[in-house]
Image (tube, rainbow, N blue to C red; front, side, top):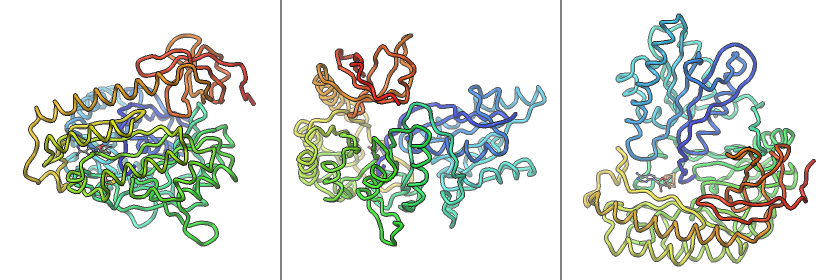
Length: 467
Ligand code: 5AD
Ligand code: SF4
């Protein structure tokens, strides 16, 4: 991200060869999903194989998210549940290594070990490559292992190059981590550390392997993905536009997305890339947070509402069908009714295809948490309701306009109903059709015929690009 969009999810990650079970629970943003996959890759040579139930796992990793409210409480309540699993297994003579990873581990590592002494390993996001060594130390040590430093070595240099390729033709690839922007409300600069970009060559290699395994769409990830400035193979620093051009041209990535972007880092080259690079999908998550200049300044966002409007206009000139998404916070300290109305007006002016919206909640250690003028809960509730109703209207209108259109869909998996497969339109809408499993991982043309609450129904046109 800059602003990672937390997607609450619990995923089990599949893994390699032999006899030890690994169960990974992933909360939070896409970057955590990517990190969980990479932790699995790191543990595969130790013989860990994914299992979908914690009670069959010799190792359980809880990969946590700290972005919003009550993150630590949620972790402790989940740990309470996992403790019972660990105890039941111990009674049956089976050991379980319990690890807590992610941003809550980074921010509250000591607290976790104090309150949940049955946890064996606590590791921050910059130390995943050290996991095998930590597992060995946990096996030897009497106490728990904690690794929440920001190591001098780059974890990406130490992660195995071979990664398990997710099924379904779409993959995440982290190209950048951390954030130096210090928005008033946000914990990310404290949990993920300073902004850093991976070198171009490493990204190209990883992308090449993904494409060789059938991946057609890559979503480039970073807390500030469009601040990307990686060392290029020619000795110069590359920005995101040059990287995406190369990924499409040299590596042959068919569809490219990137998330999450900050308005301040959307330079002319990247705007032009949306006109010039057909592989760049016409969907952009570009969080604005508020439509009031007063609040934007208090948030330390570094741009005004008008600058955001102008940027959107330039993007839409470059790519007229670009679908926009954003994050909004209501009730930031000091937000008045007038400020909130300005946010509503900005939403009306721009028109979003989808958006995430949140009530401000204080994160300990961030500047906004100490500010006076905290907004009362009931005011925040009322504002959020109005804002979400407006965003819902816009999302429905955007999806309704797709009915009757013909779009290319990347099918990523089976649908909920038998005989159904589902995938994503270029505008990141979920699309379901009746179709064969053989289309999973492929792009096919679809006529959109029906609007559902959060998805679209379609019919295959028959002109697929099956290979
Ligand atoms: N309170 C509410 N929302 C927050 N976000 C980040 N921190 C907070 C907070 N303290 C939201 C922002 C960000 C998204 C990922 O989460 O909108 O863009
Ligand atoms: Fe995004 Fe601001 Fe948080 Fe950085 S500090 S991750 S720019 S919300």
